[in-house]
Amino acid sequence: MSLVRWNPRQSLMSLPSALDDFFRGFGLNFEEQDRIWMPIVDVAETEDAYEIKAEIPGLKKEDIKISLEEGMLTLQGEKKEEKEKEKRNYHRIERVYGAFHRSFRLPREVEADKIKARYEDGILSVVIPKSEKLKPKQIAVS
Image (cartoon, rainbow, N blue to C red; front, side, top):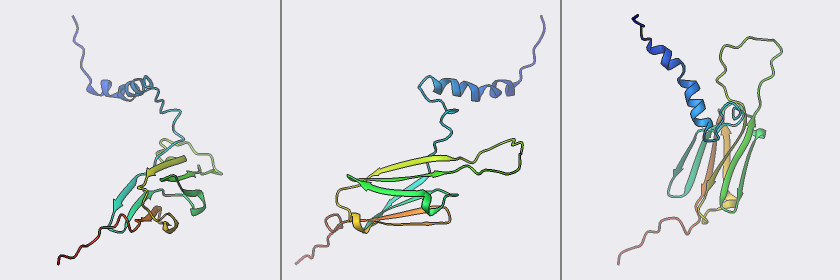
């Protein structure tokens, strides 16, 4: 009988492949979905408005579309892959390219015509004012 030295890294090396196989069983193939990404978003509420901030660095304002239809606010755009003139051998590519699409259900009582959006330093800020119906009312006690 011979002893075999256990190498914990050997079982860890197969973990990414095992995870891919597991999720592929649910119809999720990450190798084919590398062209779709989802920006990180913060959603907040103040007394007067709802605020959405999305991290979408590397885009131009012209590449971002915002729409409101039937109470659904949609942010969409595309981060185009950079075309390089020089050939390089990449060892790792972590930046994500491709189309994105995020939608948020809004309450009916918002001022749709007063929605404002600003894009600065890779952050898209959207402010959706509440209608007077949604704003808290102060009632005087007599």
